[in-house]
Image (cartoon, helix red, strand yellow):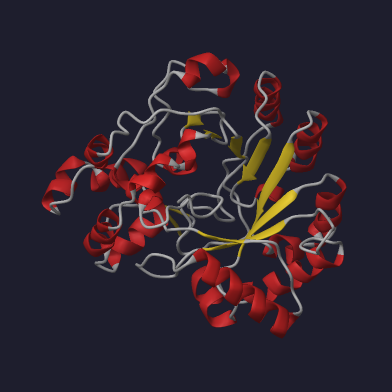
Length: 348
């Protein structure tokens, strides 16, 4: 597979990834094009609804190098959102009534202006959701107070935990990740996160470790709650089961393991029109680390900008963006398979 390398870290070439996902490959596999599937159920062109979430990637730097990371994040990534771009995000946000700002990365906490940004968003009266990988909390003493900082700003925390066992978690995210994740979850619980009546929301995010779709979100949540309480005394609010989208490292894995064709066939076979109608790109606007605008975080990783004259947050125009057509490609099957998939779990 064609790829780029930086300091020993493989970076998927977005142009090549698009080639893999484009029409000629779909035809080779005899798979219908995603936009045709939408046409068949009366959803093409796909249009946005009132935005509920502004999702902002504040940088690709991360303390982990997870096998299936769709951002290709890692310690060697230098793409970091500047305070100037953050201010442009704040200026745009102030023009809207978007209720939630979803901060992601990399590890968003590694951006040097992360805390300032959270505080400024909070001043605008918006809810802040942080996608925390958990291990960052215990990675360095400068992050030890993150649970208290989150609490002070009413931050909702969404944390990835591939499984409730060390073997499965570490195989996907690296040696020692499960142990550190348990430590971090206990620290969050200690300040009230996940505790009944605290108002401090702690959700977990599950995604499969192989080339298959996630099981029942409800069933997985029950299992996680039971085992984490029994074995570790940990509580949380909800678990979101997310389908792995075939981009970046996960696409690398599918191709190298010769699972790409089979996985795509699973996604296409499981296409659900109800899930398609509720895809997150309709109610979410994604902002890249450099201020670029996208329909979703996955399009961002493929350099698929919004289909609008407004393609940077500095030029934000809510009315112009509301008129756009959402950009789709073959990877979108991942969000429409089975019960659907979004950053907030199932959609159907």
